[in-house]
Image 1 (cartoon, rainbow, N blue to C red):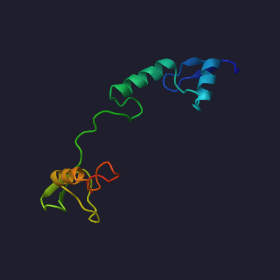
Image 2: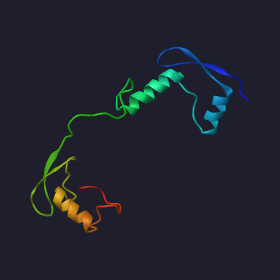
Image 3: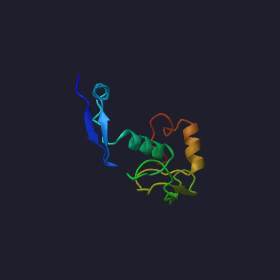
Length: 117
């Protein structure tokens, strides 16, 4: 059994104890040693769970309005708004035609299709 180790938190700079039991637990699961103290880990988890960005700039939360692009539906010819820049080499469908193709098993549903293009 490894001896207890004192580590320094990368967020608050405080030292914390990384016990031999915790070391065994982390090693058994293939985790690296923690870089944050228990308090900072809990605060970071709470921030992630609430959808905030915290100090690391990632995670959930709102990213604002999504960029939409106008395209012509390959099936009906109507205008379609899609969340990707159409490249022109694959068909693009409006929501109605896309849904009809999915319902009819047109290869764009759960069978491994590639979305609305």
